[in-house]
Length: 239
Image (cartoon, rainbow, N blue to C red; front, side, top):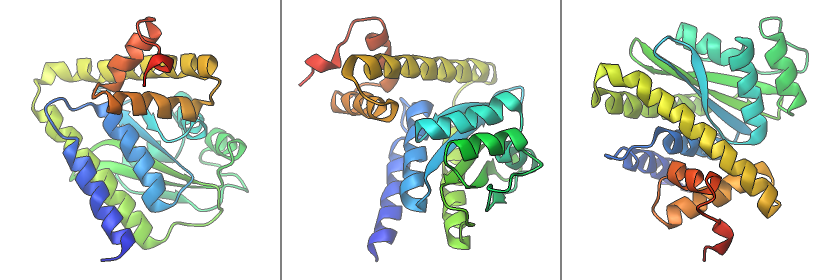
């Protein structure tokens, strides 16, 4: 088994290990976004999930630049993820340098952020599509077939995990679950902003500090973020 094959196996095991009783969809998808950039050798990754009304919401992004691009998709209602979610099929644009008439606002935002190609993958299980994974690259070239297949496998594995979790709760609680996830994201972004200013870090390093502290202390990232925002925790005092 090659080192790359071993790493792929380790990532799938890592994702499976997160599907436990205290499943945290935010941390799960944040981890997936980072692992996608590592395994698929892309520059950025963003993940959108649909709410009960079928509207896509940004849940995770590997970098600040990827987050801004994904927010453009959500706010302007255009982009490859929306198309992948609607059709249930992968959507690729190998070269954004000459624009794309389908998504002019998304394309402009992607190019401004330094991305020159995009590959959107549906998060699906048979006929059920719950969101989309967006792979962003600073190279104007298509992803090869094997890379796309691995990316789809990661997206499918995440979909199975989320749907299994949803199957454990009552139907009327699904909307509350997504709202809690969105509230968690707001708390995490607020904590990142605080750490950015108080520790003199950039946004990505602030998130790394937050995640590292959470894991080292065996606490949910949302709870740590809430303590930081409420002034109950200063991770500068942590060992």
